[in-house]
Amino acid sequence: METKKHYNVAIDCLRILSIVAVVAVHTTTRTLEISSFAIQKIPFTLFLNQVFRFAVPLFFMISGFVLELNYHLHENYLTYLKKRLNRIFIPYVFWSLIYYCFVYYKNRNPNFLDSLLRGDASYQLYFIPAILIFYLLFPLMHKYIAVIGNRWVMILLFLIQLLLLFYDYHIRPLPLFYPLSIALLNYYAFIFGIILARNQGVVTTFINKWKMLLLLGAIAFGMFVFYQGFSGYLLTQNYLTFYSQWRPSVLLYTFFLSGFLYWFFNKMVVNVSLCKTLAKLSFFVFFIHVIVLETLWHAIGINVFQLQFAQDLWWDPVFFSSVTLVSFSLAYMAHKIPYLSKLTG
Image (cartoon, rainbow, N blue to C red; front, top):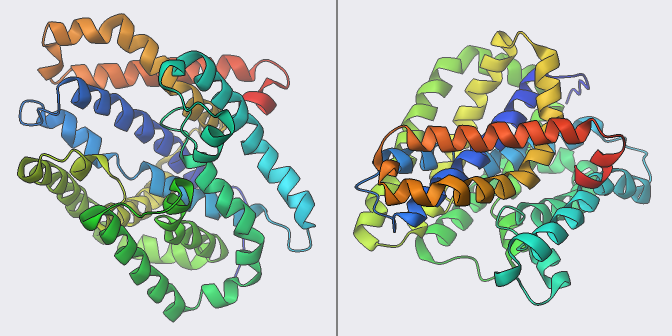
């Protein structure tokens, strides 16, 4: 396997797209919730909500990719943990305290440590305990990557992943500690990211050759994800049919879409400096965008729904754009303060 450890603008672009997609999912979810899931009246909202569901699986894939590129084989395990985990764990604790004490204090878990372990101080934070599990296991994965990356092993792991996703989506949620279940539902995306990082030359050649097929696959699976959420809710009246992103269809959609966008960003991005800047701000945006969402919603959202403007096509793009712009602006200003990013991400 070959390893090329150089800057890849497409990865930063995908990282930016992932956080933008997270914001889109959360803003449209708020519209759906306040409308009592009247999806037949606001199908455009549901469409946006579904086509951005690639966000979290893509985050896991990028995490595996970046960890592999920056890992040193002879690095001491404790040194590795200190270097990597501090970048994510300290901001996680900081923002968990903010949400726990000041934002969702009325509905908070009575035990902060338990909330920290579960990632439920705010609804976007569940991702962090799950990714920390992968951070802890990564050196072991890296050590045995020759075995894990074997073609037949990867096929077996993929089939098991699809079965877990099918069970969680179609039968019942995995009856496990929540961060562990999230990790189990995303292990293949993380491992796949590692394999991609070790074979960038082969991957680039494959994507260049099959880019149009990847685009067609992304469109087909994206439409299926929307249809699945829409028709599933009409049949069952269970909002989890569109709320859950842990589905076989979403994973396949993520792979096709990210493959095409990897080619697109490598070919089309002109302002690399801007991409680097926005990518550095994305972690802060991940943490703060829910505060921005809540603030803007209580300022304008409730009145908008009272006037039934949310059924108009302009509402969701405007609400999403506002939350995204304010979040990135706050991130930019915060990163201008020396050393603050060590605390806030």
